[in-house]
Length: 233
Ligand code: CA
Image 1 (cartoon, rainbow, N blue to C red):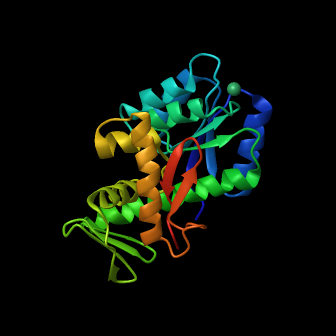
Image 2 (cartoon, rainbow, N blue to C red):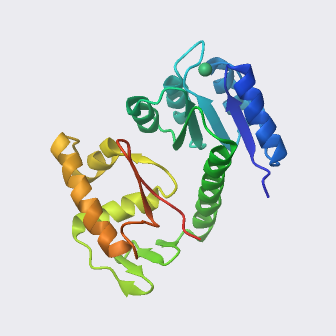
Image 3 (cartoon, protein in one colour):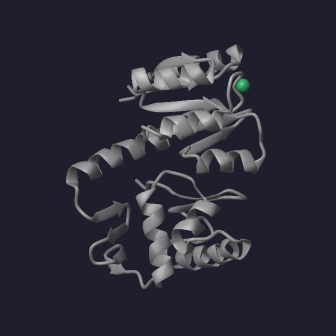
């Protein structure tokens, strides 16, 4: 059921063609835009399911495109960037992007990111339907009303900060959250020592949550960027 419509924003024609060919082969529908203005226009008039957005556009910075789209829509945005610097990824994620790909990327990477986004969309829809206050992801269950988390039915003994951290990741499952975003939400600040504390709390949370903390199933580390909770089958 790969019938998602993808808006591909890329000014480099060969790269754009490579992406659209890949999408076609894998049954995704697509529309294209070669500039920031065109991207914003297509996003608002066609309401795509996912936006694949190149950050280096001729008329405006891709981060500005994210900010403009985010002023009226939560549609998933995956950033594609030739810039490998973490600072650009972080700026794009903080502006509201959901995920990123660094050029050059493989077709498999692109498809993997789309599958993550697709699962997140499906989960968001089913959660909106059930409208209850319980989050389930594989063996993990969080009862927000009771303020408790369980693995395989057994209660996790979490400190208040660990619980807050787990809920924040769960409520944004599938999305990469930056260190700054997380520390702002947990402590209301983002000093360097908050980021160091975050690392410590994340390590203790993982020890309680993950069956094998060295090869985590739930919480993925994005070195220099942040963390993401994955949807577990
Ligand atoms: Ca470009």
